[in-house]
Image (cartoon, rainbow, N blue to C red; front, top):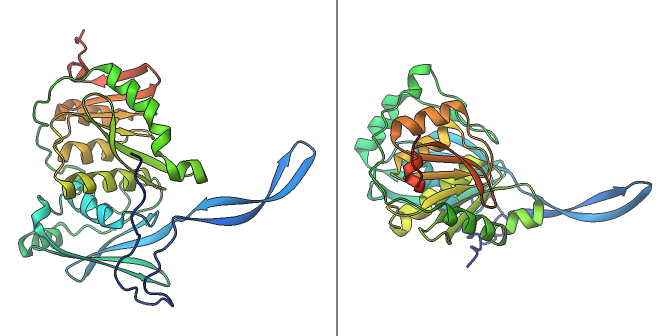
Length: 289
């Protein structure tokens, strides 16, 4: 069934009149609709985009601009996909606080992981659609990436099935037209989980956080994203050991290079029964030529 976004901030906010009121994912705003010479006043649902600070053991590490839904999944998925945590068990506590300037996600993590985080001296300032904002040097891109473990081959028909199901799962997109989606799809092509966000990287991190939190077996199946496939999105999927990433739009050349090196099947331009496979075609049951 399509996913209903979770409450945005279940903990007591820092400064708010109603401590139990979650922040909305979208809001109605007055607009004027123009059709040729005709103009009509109306209301449009506009997606929310709020600063979300990730604070590890009291130290602010990253500020993302995100849709305020499924924030627990976002925090866990970001921590895992960025290599801050290796396992979910290294996250001891997570609290969410809303203030006048945005949201703080306060994570308590294992001391060894926090020491590694401080040693990396990385300070991100994420913006919508930004993948590597704030990386201090080119050396920071060379994070070691273990090869993706072998996975059973998928059928390209499963991709077509998932694409047909995708619109029915994108509730925020139907309301606002302004969000990306990342979905986990089983081997038969049925969507089992989906997360949405104004940022494509955030949507993927939310999905990865959900998969880790629920202990989902990712040995068979694939990730489907409604956006292009960038270097960092391939990296995030590969870090979590997922063997196949399918994008509705195009990949970048750097993403293809990383997918090839990591042993990950990467496909793009997935529309109906059509798609383009850029790396490891055997993962989709295709013979390499």
